[in-house]
Length: 81
Image (cartoon, rainbow, N blue to C red; front, side, top):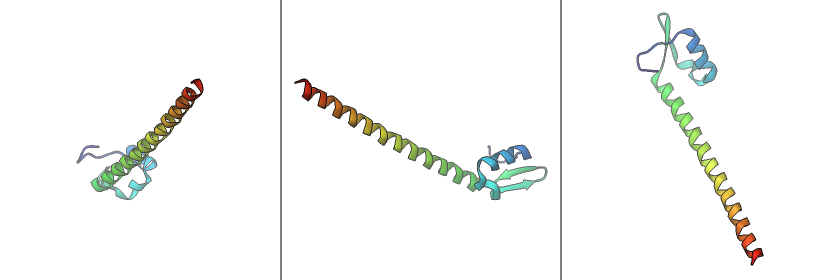
């Protein structure tokens, strides 16, 4: 959403249903609604943190799989000799 833009009730309802934390940050302006910038920034930062945690966890899981595969390969080479 661009700065200074407003939303209709359907967009506001969808936004609140997807992100309940924004409910208190939505203000009625005439026939439309706006969202406080700080609330959007907070939501973006929270989502970024969640994504970073997910990426970190996936990286750690991949390291474990690679290590386990390497151990199996090394064990096979020892048996093979």
